Image (cartoon, rainbow, N blue to C red):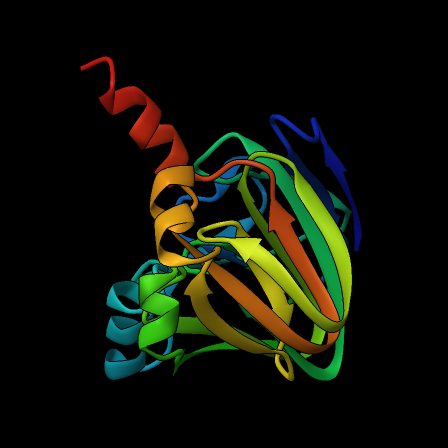
Length: 219
């Protein structure tokens, strides 16, 4: 399988070339264009219970799409996300990574998605009450509104709410005020997410909450 991320960071999309016998699993509605010879199959995102959990708790769609190349030559597929922004790929080797709701775009067949309870603090931090966890072996593509920045956490790190896109499973998240009560309220920062441990995180430079808040001022 050949693939590349193009149009980054503002309008990133994935250009793929599937060899005969290869397939890719995507979020529902992620396909922008494809060769007419590719076969597409829509199915529930797991069993009925897990599909409902991923939709209402993990921010993903009830259905997923599988694109398979059953022809005799390589075929092209273009995959995108619903918002303007950047896309990243990560290689998992019998490992896992946590994603914010709605970040998942596509993966190879060796990766499975599940939802896990993230805690009340995560809900307060606008990261969702449940987190989406991808585990297995293969390639995972995810994205978010705005640009994406990679950081290596060693000890502790502070992230503004709704800016954390992905993080290693071993990292611990805690919600706290950005300062004392008065400065937290007057600075406009409010709550922040404190990340503790050693591992990698991906941050987005913009957030949908920030965008909607900016738009609402003019409506």
